[in-house]
Image 1 (cartoon, rainbow, N blue to C red):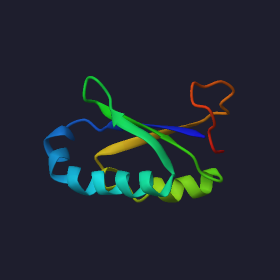
Image 2: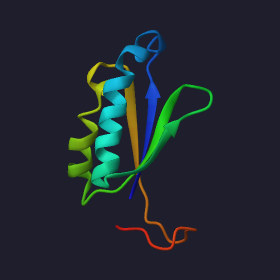
Image 3: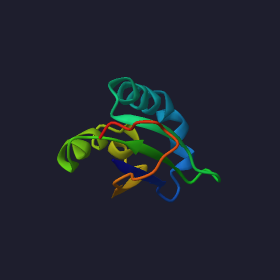
Image 4: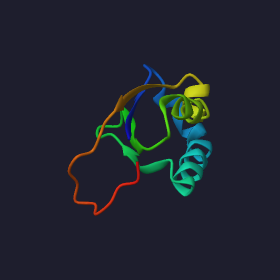
Length: 94
């Protein structure tokens, strides 16, 4: 499982709104596929966070490369791999 931490680049907020429909379609596509489990904006609005699962980091990197925010040079990703050991969720697919 992975935590994807998106950070908007300096000055990107002025351009982000134009890319939101395409970014949301990207998020929705990967939520439906089960790759993304949760996503949301940071507060304050400096980026976002995605909880993701993928067979391996290479597969995840291919998914991340599709993000319109990344392709447009508006955001950077930090990826942290985790091994869940406790959760309020009854079962997490890994």
